[in-house]
Length: 194
Image 1 (cartoon, rainbow, N blue to C red):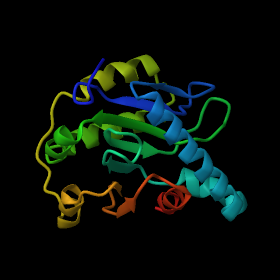
Image 2: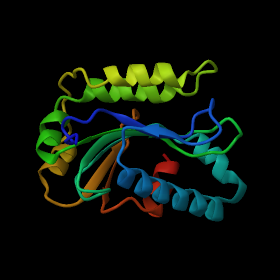
Image 3: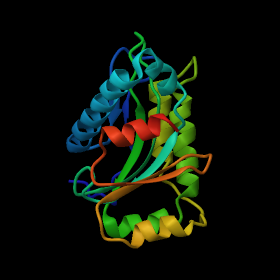
Image 4: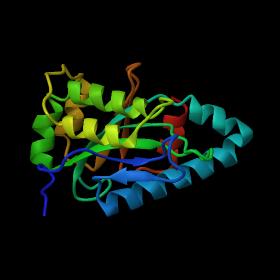
């Protein structure tokens, strides 16, 4: 069995070239909880926003995240999430995520800026007209091959040092949101609004 620190990066969600969900490399427990959270979030967005939900969904920024163990399962996760659409026009976010043990996670996050940059680029590549899932998976295997130092803000450093079950989400526009506990519809609506 692969340990979290040995695990590579995985993905799950909708891409324009396939008629249903695609995914690999993420635990069943993660996928079930992730899918349930997002299904509920999408339904709540449709209830609250009516027809405007789709414009908000498609305009949602790419979000980077770091989740402590206990948020999804007993593993920490780093990843990126963005809006996705499948070949038949159904909408659902696409995620690229890397599972890891807490001890490894803390050290890894301090040098992860290149990983996040490349993960974001890979996620965005799913929007290309000539997107190839096989090429995507090949590039995904290269994702875990190194990183450089990122200067973290004090708020993010505090997140790492606190012992609670939480996640932190940020965008390239430097929006930062800390969320207590498991992802819920309130978090999804917050992310939907940018």
